[in-house]
Image (cartoon, rainbow, N blue to C red):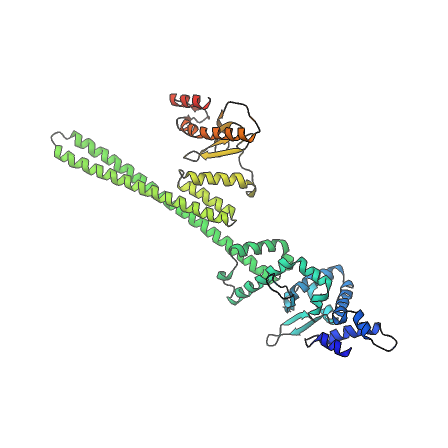
Length: 449
């Protein structure tokens, strides 16, 4: 029996408490004054005795202390990753990282010889660890905790490495969490903040503050870029108008200069050159705004794919501001609002249809929205207030069949081109009434067929 016990406990630190647990259990099963191998088999060896002792100590703890015990042991065990073939193993933890409740539990379980405490050489830091790994493998309650929280514990182990790197970098902003790492950390912070140490919470909070700071700087940069582009555009438009006026003046003088044909010829040529130059400057300004619009659109697409929907929506809005004729950006902005309006937290203006909306386009200046629906209607609304300016009904009965619905959808979508020309031919007065020309009446008759 002695050889069996010594073989089972091995040479790891904390082996004497294991021997004590085993001998106590065997003594309680003694036959007279005789200790038997049968009794040793009944207690399932050293590991079984240790597990029984741990369960007995746990049942004597208060509910609050039992909760603290689970949190403490989650830091004292390194769980194996799925790709690893090994088992869960023990690991040391600094007692200073534990809260008051966990420290009280650690001292009590150390007195019961289930945990081992010690002072780290050189630093004097008090550490704590599981007395023997057989406790991890054989205490069913502990195994249940580990399996239940394995996903969280694996993430916290990864976070520990990143936290160490941040400390070694003297808490540099460059070592903070970014992208998917931050998103995952924020999720666990929201769900399990009470299971994180003060240092882990500090690390995640600093990462969130840095993310918000960078986002604010990006918004300010975009605003400055928009203001600069608008200022340049206004300057170039003003210069173009001045040059055009000068060109007309020079042309009038040239025509009025009787007998000065040669002089007038050269003056007209100069005026034309100035006009071409003004138009070229206007085209450059429009090209710059178009490039800025596509840059914002590409940035929006990237941020939406990353899951940063609100930032992406803001970039789509800037893309439309830079170039109101960027229909792709405008339609994408409208689609994101329709599909993800629940993310905003505040209701949008309602563009009401009685069936699915299959298409929506903005007017070139972004002030109106034209929608087409499976309810056989197309509606023109104010883009801000959703006030209905005009509505058009396609004739024929409505039906729930897929074939007829698709046919109706194609018919409504075909009306978009006619409606776009129809809207461009009409003017809206201040009270919302419409002024129609003979061309609009002709288009209206085509739409109502």
